[in-house]
Length: 206
Image (cartoon, rainbow, N blue to C red; front, side, top):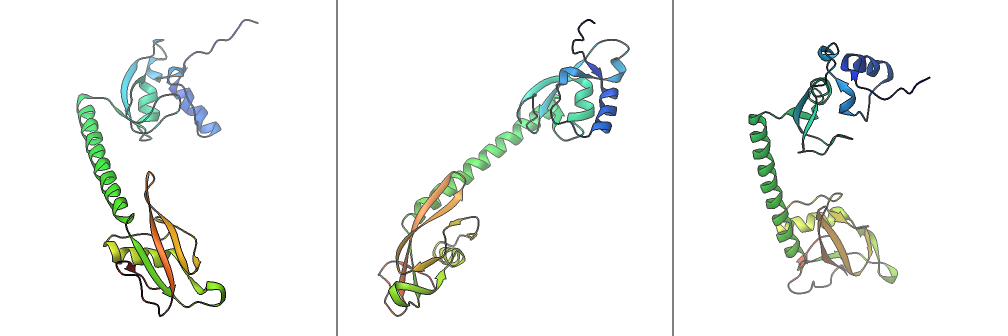
């Protein structure tokens, strides 16, 4: 028997196959074309802007030329792409520029807050038992609340405070994650209840 090279298939047949075998994760646009062109034996193309990363096609923001049927029957209905009309291109570029400005603004705010936090020392008083062990602990929630009082900014104990509960007196370094790429370290001083806090340090309540 002769070879059977891969050839484009009609999108109508393709969609029938999808219904039979379930979702298709990786599909080449060169293998799918519109059913209206089955009789003509040609595969028209259309330019699209990818809204999300698409396997074997490209990344979000890329402008790609794909089969018309693939765009109309797969990419666009699933919110993976937009047809790259002049108006859509202009709007997409404007949105990307706006997103980039917002991202830069948020990154600058995080860096400024990180620099401020590097000079912060939180002081907690707690009841202490033998060998400096606390009755209880200073938790991430305690640290988040004290930071809010100190800075006026909101902190989430799970999202921002990278620390196990502190169970001993003394100085401790705690990492604060403001963004995936921005962290800062603060000092947490735990003292036996009744001692005077060091002058100039922030005060928390254990």
